[in-house]
Length: 330
Ligand code: NAD
Image (tube, rainbow, N blue to C red; front, side, top):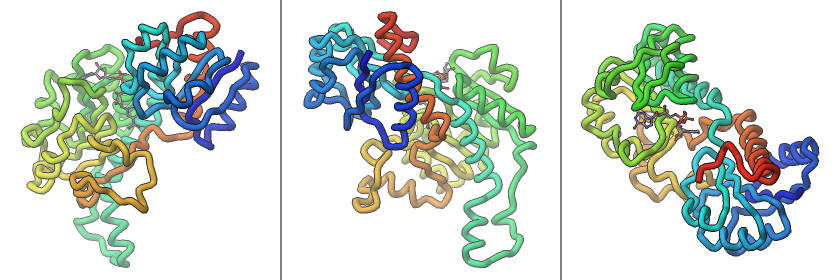
């Protein structure tokens, strides 16, 4: 059995090597994402896995079909870069890695919440200036006395609720489809508006859908407590950046920690040191004193990196051995 592995970062090489040995499967690393130009390199292999953040056009599925390959295993939760219809037409199974480490994202949410509540940035600024006075600008609150609102109570939302509960916070939740498991850690509210009215911290864990595009806009922030913090580790499109900046400037809420931005596209993950940020809205967000921005790294732990690669390779092998995979998305 032979698998072609596209788009591998250096840190992933030892994981691929170990998987190959453990499963007694030959693997070949191919530089870059899969494209019409390099798909021919998959010829002669039994399966393909990649990590795309650019479109996979029809030609790729047609070529793979021609080579007798039956799948592409995407190594991420998102699979929006695939044309599922074209893939199905060519008998190509597309799979993803739906769950790899909800704990990694949840622990990062706790980090962000505590950084905001304990005013870590302000403390750091004062400390750098050698201003060591105790003053209200750096005086923190107590998470254990707060109410935390979790919107989207799936895999990540639930672990997040559990961790906040562990700190003694009261946790409330909202989901289009409430689930029993989550009620161990939170109490459901009937609407987003009802939740944000009560919450001191609001954290988003919903997928990006057509109906939640810019759900958190200026109008929504009017329902927030002026002392509340917003945390978004879901998808940037759920928050109207322009509306958020206006709301922060007017004091409708106290601050935000954002791991995603609606137009992060070509900027994340990438080294922008030489080229800078040309998107004016993004620049305003990055410069904003009440915003803690991080470049989509909530998931980024050693556990996630290992699980994403191993699950991607497992799905590839599963299709080769059984003709299908539980992680199929088309
Ligand atoms: P999940 O499918 O387990 O849970 C999503 C939950 O949201 C479900 O319970 C669903 O019923 C609910 N939901 C869907 N649409 C909704 C809406 N409009 N309003 C309210 N609830 C809604 O997904 P998950 O594994 O918990 O991941 C959640 C999201 O986190 C992903 O879709 C992804 O965008 C994001 N994510 C971010 C990172 C990062 O590094 N920042 C990493 C992984 C995932």
